[in-house]
Length: 490
Image (cartoon, rainbow, N blue to C red; front, top):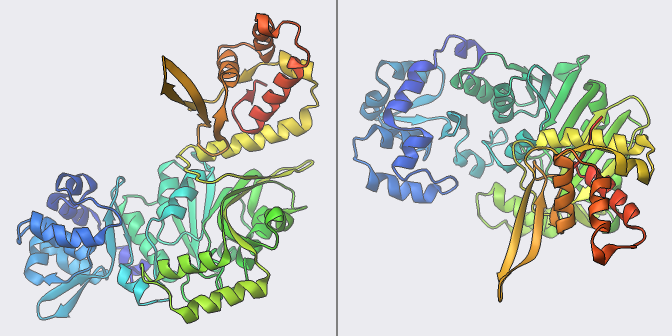
């Protein structure tokens, strides 16, 4: 499906025009009150009620959203003379009895369209099922550090969602995957997006890019810890979290100096107090600074139920499957399974490792820049050697995008109850602060120093003569640098 030799002669423009004409775009579906991501049941019932039976939009929805066959007449009305070309590349197929169906689900997205497998392939447990845009792909795209002009490897690219987003930033992208079928979808999606500068290569892990180095690597591997080998996208075929371990140990070999690899993954722990021990050990002594970030932790039985249910499109797992998975976790010695990401920056010098844990992470598109700041700031903290007096006298920059939210309660007047501060990427910091921290950010943003705030505080009668405030502010500054809320003005 979507072979390179066939797609190289396909012009996607008539197909894009047909979808746009029919209103099968994000804006068109929103206008028809049919843009309901994740709710196929509602769309199945609503579309026939809201649209005329001969509507080209209804035909497109049935073909590319619901996966239903349509008559040849309706397909011809939608695509005209381009219908045969769509059948030639394998997107549409004839079923006999004048019926046509689509071999791919095509989502109308903010950027255009994106093709992947219909859910029926997942329910049927087809090993080469190709996923669409999911939470992990959106998160990885936000976390990826690639900038315009940089060489970026999308490892485990699947149907190409991340590769497309990175190319839109101006990155020079190489998309690699072991699945020929997934890369067929990726080629189709690249053409559909009007891009022609993404390199697509096939092979196991780093095999197709042997000997090459990149400025950034973004990887969304088959990270599910599973006793099965059912799906290429889900199961790495290696015991435990060994597939992800193999990537971590080899990332440094494919990074330029200063290059950053980011991987979304799951890993198990043998002790909840030492949840970070195993991944940090994989990355030790590899010439990289390492940041491990955990966003959640599941009980093994809960984890098994979740993945079996998700792979079955909402159906409760069979008891024998659940027993197989939980027995597997006991054999591994897994007490819990963690979700998060690992970032590695190749750097000559004395390397460091750190780990952070915070639930409910909702990163935004600038998270990759925040990862860069964390690497720069942590290295500066480790190497600057400045005492408290020097820290207080130093100027710091404040990155754009930091947000503060206040929670107030009305009594006799409005009283502030809590202040919540979020870093610009909503990644390195999201927590409660006080007004002193807000004031410190304001002072530094206006060109002042932490020492200027110290003078303000000591000038207040209630703090006059108070000892140790200078040390407290210096410690606070170091912590804010650690979280990327302040940047050394070097």
